[in-house]
Length: 295
Image 1 (cartoon, rainbow, N blue to C red):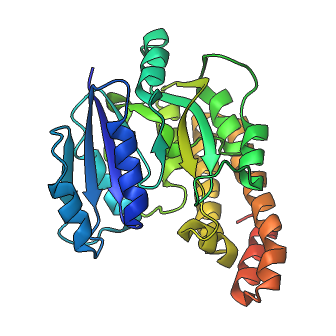
Image 2 (cartoon, one colour; image 1 turned 60 degrees about the vertical axis):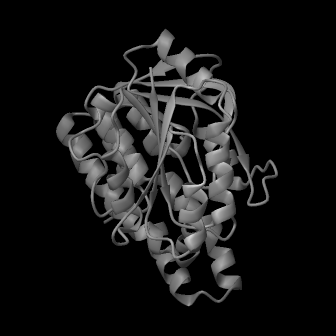
Image 3 (cartoon, rainbow, N blue to C red; image 1 turned 180 degrees about the vertical axis):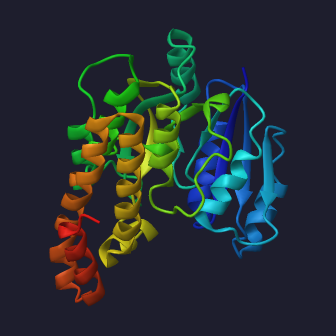
């Protein structure tokens, strides 16, 4: 069973190469990697891929820059097998990644999503446990071994705090909604897609076996968006819209959690002192508004 590995790319060339090499190093050889370059202005990228002789590696360069959401949506157009991964261009698959995912799918063949075990690393590749990842562990469901979650209980869990690591997820292609990622979302597009799958009846399998390294950068685009507070404008709109959708579905507990979006507010609270220290005046205003706003 071939697994499609999609890699939306725009950024550090060296880290992208490391990500590709980690796919090449999989113990399980049954995969097809498609790199979708969103127009990164470095000819070394195309030159490097031209020298890769493995027929399982495909390189596509967009004719124009589509942006994060657009390139993620473009990646889904290359899915041609029953299961796929949308890997980060700076993350690392450990050699046992596909083996671990296949084992989970063998035990739960109808699962829509698999969340394998993840180790967080910093921009230098060193294991790291920043506050956001310690919080993810707190929000994650308790238990050990393979376990399957679904329905409103899963939606409530994710809306309390998104404990998933999106680039490590393996998806069942036919479980996705038409169009895949919702357009217009750049910060919460991953959570939105998971919730669309869950509300359509899809289940998620969690495994503890560490087989993926997720890279968290101190100076990443999302980190700066958070410090400026702009990412929370999108989060607030998304959670309030989700609250209305959950209420219409009759999932009232999930609706209440989405309306409160407490973890998002707490995240803003932790960033507020840093915004003050860096004299990010717009960030202070945006973060403060997010802490108290309900609409």
